[in-house]
Amino acid sequence: MKIFRIVLIMAAFAQISFSQTEQSGWLPRIFTSTDGHGTPYRLFVPSSYQSGKSYPLILWLHGSAGRGTDNIRNISGGNELGSHIWTYPENQKLHPCFVVAPQCPDTTLWVTNDGREDPPDQLDFVVQLLSSIEKMYHIDTNRVYVSGQSMGGVATWEILERYPEKFAAGIPLCGLSDTRKASVLSKIPIWAFHGAADSIVSVTHAREMIDALRKAGGHPKYTEYKGVGHDVWTVAFKERTLLEWVFSQHRQD
Image (tube, rainbow, N blue to C red; front, top):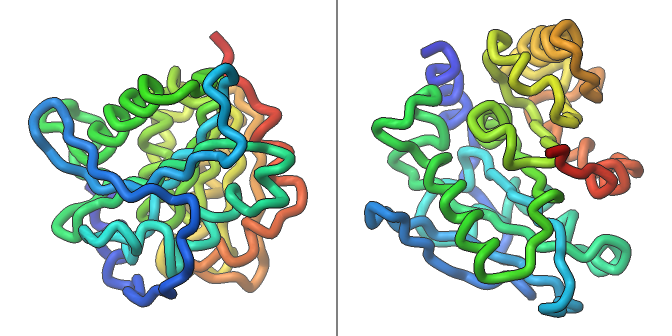
């Protein structure tokens, strides 16, 4: 349960403050799972959406400051950049895509069962949510991507490990994972980010995971920022080639 304990530390570290920005284009919704579990989420639908075309989808998994039931913190404050970078008009013009940002309750974490299916945890509900969106809209299921920071970075690694057939690429930021599962991820394009001065999740975790992936035959991209702490997202999402890299990835059958 090492990962679980570190996530609790990240939750305590998070600052629950956020800007009341204009959330234009973000539809507020509630998803009800097969067992009646309700999950608030925001859905960004491209303004150019046409039912005759298929579109890629970004799944955004917020950090611990995004938890709650207000359906705002998941896409604002410290989670604004990671959720909105894909929706900027200049980026939508080049890469029109859907973005879905579910909200984890403040009584739990994204990952609580370490991959066991009974009982299900928030990540299992998220995958049900994705399936429901794919039925409502024309989503290119070969171009579904996942990204998350801090608590959401842990969740990004975990959801890729549980559902490797679901995603075309993953972008975990300041998260950690189980190196014993590296072989499951070896064929998934991954670009991981971590700050070398992170005092919440040691950069050692990222280095060890990237090394394990490479030993398992994978070819992950890894960017480590000298002098940057836990809030690595403040620089990672400014990488000029990030969007081009993401949207060039396609799931391999």
